Image (cartoon, rainbow, N blue to C red; front, side, top):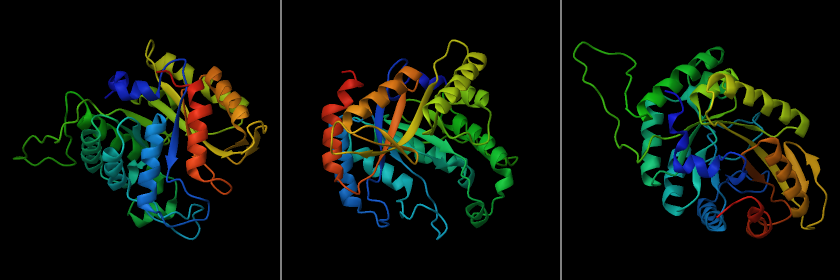
Length: 317
């Protein structure tokens, strides 16, 4: 299925031509903390929803190990997304990203349809391929098959969530019935590529509403965006496909503090942050998901400052 659902309302709120939207990555926790306080995270999600952030991003980390740099015991993404569907009312909910290679695609489609229904169409299904060989082994998969699994599973998910809907069984017996996927969400669930999944940018342009990647140095990111625009023009001429990045942010309490690069993002005061985001908008970036560092300031204060002094520069009524 091609990305025919790119015109859906929730996709347009997150990915809009010539505009930049801003989201947050959950959970919001200080680095080094491993246990998620679910009640606190639900409260912060409501706060972000009320503050006007356009998206809340949820990661899929099936297993933890001592050699994995993220110590957080992330909640199961589908349970977490179901909770957020009823805790929030406006913001898009985006999986960033469901590990498509380690889950059966029909289970993914069923869960995505359920979250979309619970959230009244506010869900965007971000899909990634995973990249940790030991985790593939734990699930009985070969990491060398990652590229093929991603492409094959994507097509099964896309058909099951598309319009018209088509469930593609792994194996069909002689007397197999025609299956349907229920519930049927209000609209086809938009599919977003998070990372490349081992696919070409032309494949992504044909199959996804957009491409989400990690933060890079501006000149390098501009080259990547130009590559993306070329792929879109070649593969789906006349169609819009979004481009976004995940950025780590250490928001300085001094509004005038300059932007200083850190790993995968910046430490900056709010004035410099607006300049950074405005430059990204001018470059062609349509969405930035902020991963907040909370070592020096509480999440509430940062959310309030961003909502008051940063979001109004980019979010239209």
